[in-house]
Image (tube, rainbow, N blue to C red; front, top):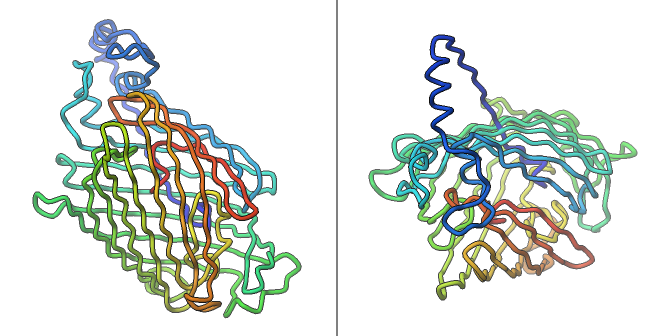
Amino acid sequence: MTMLGRPVFAGVTAVLVAITSAPCAALRAEEKAPLSFIDPADGQLDMSDFLLKHKGALPVPIVITEPAVGYGAGLGLLFFSGPIAEEVENTTVEPPNKSPPNVTALGGMYTQNGTWAAAAAHFHTWDDDRYRYLGAVAKVDAHLDYFGPTSQARAYTLQGDALLQQFLVRLGNSRWYAGARYVFFNATSSFAGGSIPASIANFERNQRIGAGSVILDYDSRDNIFFPAAGSFAELEAQFARTGLGGTQNYDVYAARGFKWFPLARALILGLRIDTKFSTGDIPFYAQPYVDLRGVQKGRYQDRNAITTEAELRWDVTPRWSLLGFTGLGKAYGRLESFSQAQNVTSVGAGFRYLIARKLGVSIGIDVAHSKDQNAFYIQVGSAWR
């Protein structure tokens, strides 16, 4: 299912008022450097100081061309904080601390077929990146298509509220992290016309997913937003149980990995593999699917799915990058065997601009094509999550 089917988000706000500290606050405001959107290191447009020193938000316009929900628009806001913000107060160069910043995200979107979603999320690290936390909440009303073995689209509506909580701990001084994840999704689904596709077994209009996961991560990326070197890998064993708040019992075993190879000073090859295998009474909308840019979300869906992708990036200048990508995937297991399942391919290109050098945050657009489908995406950093 689309990112609408995996809602991820949580936000926290706080206000502190101290009347007696007003004179000191005014003095600090006078001493703070004036706001500038020009990086003194290269004279280019840059939002590092605005995001870190002045606690501003990075607005991310959401232009939706996803075939699953039609055209639409939305807006996301990203707020950055943490030790990296403190280090840049007195420097104009790259901060020595490579710990990722804390990030709070707020967003919402609406599409032409009536699909809408709102979400909030927070990512936080402690103790020099020894502990990592991710929390999220979301509400979604999605109008989607289900494709069975006949490949004929059947319209359905999926509404619900979601919660995600995740906590990871670094193993010793290694680059490995271990921990747990919990997902709760209270969903209501219905098909247009009221009839249920024959390929869906044990359909229930009202369902809850309560799933706990054991997570093992490896992270050696030089930057979590737009890496130029290093690797990220994740192994997950997810167990959905009625005892965890759900109405269904099923398991999902997933493995994904990303690797970036610097081929030359400005040429980087990225490789991706993403696999999911499910067993038990998994809801039709939660089944694994082929996830490629340019391919309709949920179009190729079954008990299991595997996706591979390669991306070649050229850093034309320290700020501007061009990239091209292609991918291959298939979904199989219950409707079709691995050998019978269709090979799904996509191809595309894009660009990025390094909008916040001290954070390593870039923003740009990807344009992708697959069989009978075209789409473009506004991206913050890498498309691989």
